[in-house]
Length: 390
Ligand SMILES: *Cc1c(COP(=O)(O)O)cnc(C)c1O
Image 1 (cartoon, rainbow, N blue to C red):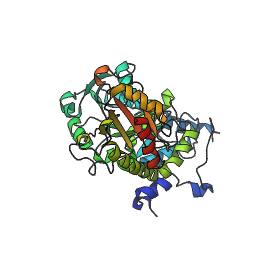
Image 2 (tube, helix red, strand yellow):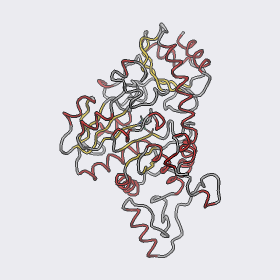
Image 3 (cartoon, rainbow, N blue to C red):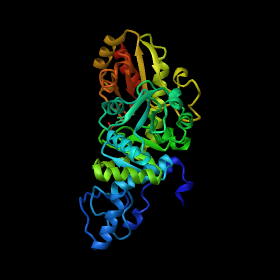
Image 4 (cartoon, rainbow, N blue to C red):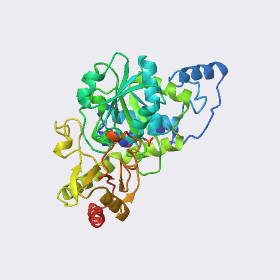
């Protein structure tokens, strides 16, 4: 059966496994080799040449060296590309390594050095751009200003939707139109390919912190970027030269994580929806940030761009920062920790932690806490929040 006919859930289970039958195995092998025996100088050299330029190994030429290619990671990449509906994907040692490689590749691919960054962004991304480490000139703006801010030397327009931590939705198609041909990168970490495929709306590049939902169990750090074969070659070239590799064990765990991604995301989303409905009526909560709330989605992107509202939410506390301290200290079932997207529920204070490096003018309020809803019984999660909110 051709994978083109398979539904998303079936693809999640079977993508990236085409070679397993021929190998005589049921699960993907974990290949830990740092080097590979060379067939001969000519073929090995040709394979090296191809991969150092961002290409695939040549037939019979072998993988040469683990910084150039790893079959376990390549299977995860192929699977993720299928779930995002792109030609290829390239995995990195972390989401930030993926972001760094993308910024470097965008510069070499377009010759430009100007980045338009739509705020709010993940604190680490904001920090990387503001640090000047990569030498790019950055204009921060809102989605509505992208058309005005792009320039002939703009090499990348960067956007995150739903945004972190305020869960505002950005119209990807509108940003792509405003970018007028410049490459648009969408950080799809919060939505996952289960709920949103940015490439279908014209994004050139789709980035994930695989550390979050793709892994889903809080035991892997990784990043991945999906896009065209040409972008993948540019990204692999950067990866081969700079060395921000995904470890094969991470690739193995992430590939396994994809098989349960649809059921995890839907179950977590269902619990989040129940908690949102309850939190919206709680006297200690001034405002709930969630894509399904009208002020997070004024133009109706849920249903059109996003297939559901997801399992991330944030709450603004009526009694401000002291109450945020109380709630994060008092939770028992929720873990007070950064990160998100795992099977267990987490709560954290963005202004003090994930968004600490962001310029004060763009930092989330001190009265906001962010919640990542896991797979626990939503009634238990509600009881925990009820006692923590006091
Ligand atoms: C965590 C995160 C990142 C960074 O990924 P790491 O794997 O921690 O390097 C990027 N974007 C978003 C939205 C994130 O949540």
